[in-house]
Length: 125
Image (cartoon, rainbow, N blue to C red; front, side, top):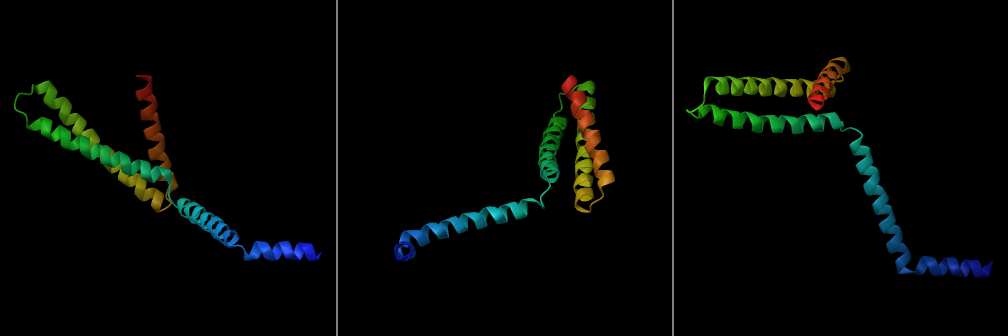
């Protein structure tokens, strides 16, 4: 037993033991806080925010295209339709974010199902 006490004292007096123990505890604390915070972030919200940013860029692009004077009526009409579609999808993403944040899941799931049906139809095309 005295030999065991001696080895325990040697381990406790060593600086590397305390440094490595502190590093392990800091690593565990970091991942625990990251995991704790990530459970409140819904991936659908971040995806919707990214989609809103893309749609805003598309709106700017289509508005620049509409300012060009050498467009035919069919091209102008097509761009106007795309512009209207982008604006409506931005509103849809914003309502999705609000409904998820306020826990109105029935509304959120309807929007998600509508988006997934659109993505499936787009993939089939």
